[in-house]
Length: 324
Image (cartoon, rainbow, N blue to C red; front, side, top):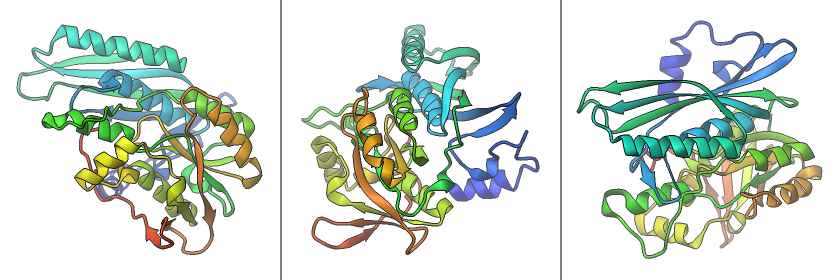
């Protein structure tokens, strides 16, 4: 995926920055433009999942949460969302109404307005159900929060348990099931991230979606030219998620989350940020899981519970397709 983006899009587009904002080349969660003394953050994402309705959420909730979360992790206050909904001919109106209701509920929870959109119908057989794309709009509240700003000495904080979303979809896909209930974590984490930003000291931050925690941390390490060291026993993973991943040969650190962020925070602010996050609706399981160092730049390493060191390489492809 990274190679396609860099070869096809970075090389394919000549003008990749506007109004002195964050450019396409940053390959961050979004971009920005400066307008009238303010910096406006813009994000864009297409969403297609299987199944469309899953334990803990659906495609509509996912689309709104994805846009709001991508916006807030760049340091912006999300204010609006634009959407594009494409359905196949014959798609049930009742299901479409459910998705719209979920979008509205998520938007209200994130305190964002859905201000514009587009709706199209494709011929039967040309599309698998429905695809929803959303663009997020936010206003930067302070300095930009970019992947390239992690600093040696920073503490690494994750806002909750990892791998929940991907395993929840896996539990119902193609008849696969587990005795223990698995529920997606899809949620708007605007309040959680805002609480962290109000404390200060946050240098880099991402929502851990495609490729999970491992992919997000590799982005920090690569772009900031640092190494990130984790402690295996400190990363919060639900027992049901770990059991499901063990059964299927998956690494929970590489499985998609849809309501969690990971951030690099100055050491003097880390405890205060952690406490602020834990005081929010979706932050009770937040934890400090590691730190940023200078040696072995570009790498993510984990100290295992048996005393070894494991390299966490950026996932190639998506371990579980069509989850976001």
